[in-house]
Image (cartoon, rainbow over all chains, first blue to last red; front, side, top):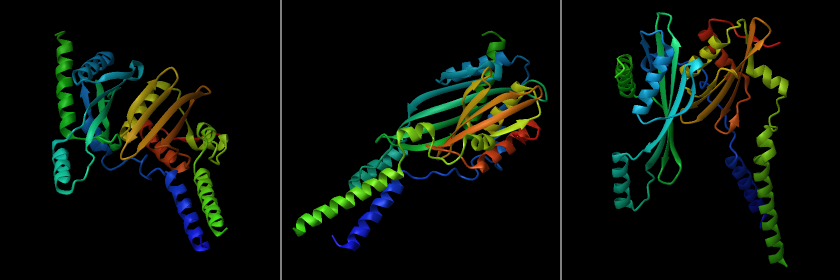
Length: 178
Length: 147
């Protein structure tokens, strides 16, 4: 082995050592309020004309159950409920793409398979009377090779609208004891 | 003879490479104790803590929850008795944070936060400054350095 080759090998080993234990740095904006913070808050929050925080939390936990969530954590004194569920993450479009790639190029493209969806529901007294309820969702998706493919907050407008529709019904049903 | 020398050189290169890789990584002890960071316990607490002129622990904890939600966290755990809140932010990365609220004297509370970005502890002062700026807004109170 020539000294030159030896140097190349040593440098390669050094670069492997960096890639193996990468130095992770937090993105600068990770803990800063953003322009869309207010819009997100409005999307995820509704005010309920009630003075009974506990009843609102019970209605909220009922809706989480309606949506198939299992309760992981609760702290009624602080108005917090946390739930999660595991679901199929197969996407028809992605599957079609993978099949096309396999047929055309014989490649084995990874496709999304499983996901863990988490939700936290928080109630808080409103300055305008009644209670505010804020729900936030996030998910982790694994592909068919067992590798995490997505790790994200869920900010789909329609999901929040549907959640609050169901919650409004639940509050009404609970109030009527139906 | 030359062949033997070549294989010895290769072996030596491999060992050097392996040593570099090992020095890049951390031991179990270093991972458990986070002892590889060069911050002292006092320095770390100072970066991660602020004092607020209020005795209302519940309101402070609820403000912490609201701030975490504003910062796109989903709450993992909340405990009124312990005075601690944990949450996770997922945005192409995983940022986990625990915030505890402890009384200091009659009229003051200490809020301490610690965060992990993916598998790395967050030790820089700036992200904590950002968090306390957001918390100040939710609490309508000024965050003061802990003396």
